[in-house]
Length: 215
Image (cartoon, rainbow, N blue to C red; front, top):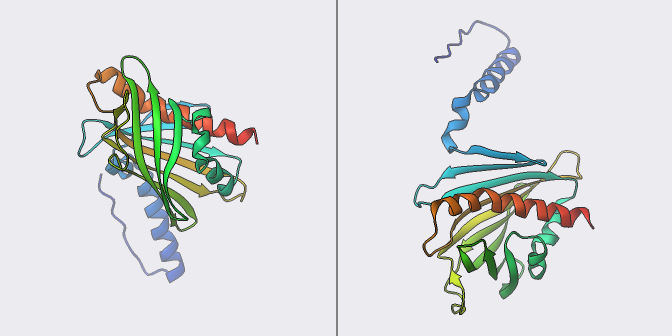
């Protein structure tokens, strides 16, 4: 579809308003959202889950979004309490900080009990704190060689993503976005991998919200 705007001599303020209206209209077209390839796969209990193909991996990326009636600091305090992850983080049965570099970054080791036939996995990640405007970001990057491999666990070769905590206009709520690209390692059936991609962020966000609401 081609959009043509015929310009006439009208006051500058009206011209600016007209152009803004055109841009808003164009942004509402589906093509405006096609560039990032995210596909909505689940909407349940206020949690939206999206997936998309990865550019450099056979595994899918996932993005989970939820808005909670709690401030950014409250959410951040739960995310940084690593020892409590097993109480709410999907499939996590143990977690600990193995290296601290306050206040900007830390290295975290997690042990995961994945559904049969996957078996136990573990992951070692570096988590960096960042600010993007008013949005707090916890950037997750793979650090698999930071500690020796643990007997009985398959070390996940790739774990990356981010937590984004965006304060809302009411000053009391936070929009939480969890984005992930994980490679569980080993040989897993496609149906299980795809199931984990959509279910893991949904379960994790629901658990995080439950902990926040219980405070």
